[in-house]
Image 1 (cartoon, rainbow, N blue to C red):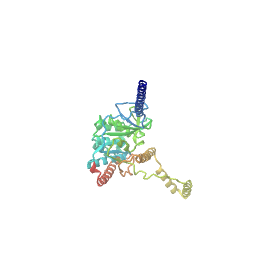
Image 2: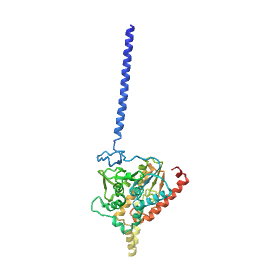
Image 3: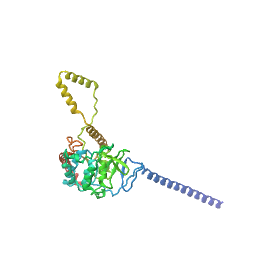
Image 4: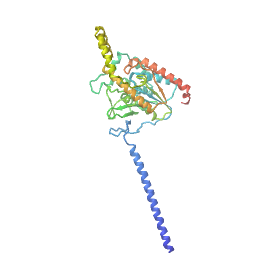
Length: 371
């Protein structure tokens, strides 16, 4: 009887161990499955694409988190926004930063912000400033190589050749701090972060205004101006985990606070009737009204540029509301349009003045003492 009881106890112990082993194996399997699913999840397509020239991928699934250089965290990051000719103000902002001695740990730039940011980090900002100040209404045409291709009216080869005079052979690795140029995939609508390989093609893609410049082909993608998706690239700066993000928004004064207009058809109709009655009194009112209508008429380029201004303004408001910078610099550039590249002196001075005002605020708040 005692032997039977001892045998029964041994069997129960073996059964218990077997169950425990099964549970342990099942738990191990679930952990392995979870790890596998997590790895698979990381390969899912992301609307923000991080391209790397050493890992080409032209399939529908874009490469994720490829980097050619180690990220630096902390410090002050600059988000330089797009805005066409208003971007010359970035030169003044960067000169003020150098004058004060604010250390910059990385720069993200969109459109002309990518151009000025890359020149700053490659120590060619003085050359860019000289070029900008040399532009006039007449000699601007020398850099406009018009083309009959359907995807744009300017090829951009002459401007690229001008950049290559100082940046030929320069890569992202040669810059004194990490740099991201933001572009847009015109076919997929993705936001594309360019941060390695040759510098000039990436900058060229970032400022390729749709309809004006030809799209830039980069690793199988057709890239255009990054301002379509991220006019002030604060999010690209945040990816580098800086202590402070300073954004330069070039379009804050264009439209003021956006509002909704609800005009009445009947008010407009009464105004038109009154104008018709005025025209009956003689030829002079008719001539003056015709001249006024002609003056208010917009050309095709004006329509394109103003449309792009509205897009930048609305997208900037939405993106900055969701991911605000720590500090924003807003140069007063209302009198500089997107195509006024000959107004470099005015824009540079306004950028410098506005940045120096912000520097005083930072000093009063004690922020500069912590950098």
